[in-house]
Length: 146
Image 1 (cartoon, helix red, strand yellow):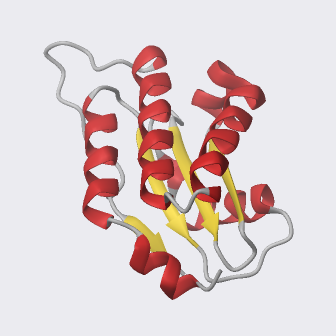
Image 2: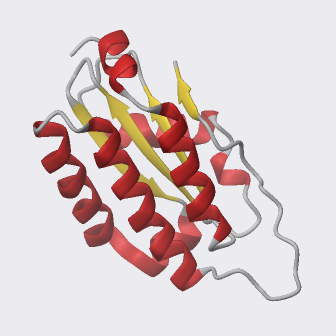
């Protein structure tokens, strides 16, 4: 699928709101990135984009990136070291499978919103907000593109 038609089908406001809600429940960070590149290995491409977006600079290493490459019809979900050691590879694969189910039905926004919610659940379980302690939003709540 071409990138612009994919982006036009996304409800950016719903996605950003899902990110905001997920982050309100935890000390973690979630981002969604849509690439215009054709990729062979979405996990490798996601890891490179993770670094470019500065996601490895969060204080607790608890950022999650949902990476979509519509041109290749591939996507990946990766977490930084802090959240990855808590969830592991099976969790990220489950998220990818769940996104795939919605994407195959053309429900792109729904797939992303559900994945953001599940990532938020994991972040809330392992990095819950601390009562009386203000949380800093370390990364912008937006859908990025290249």
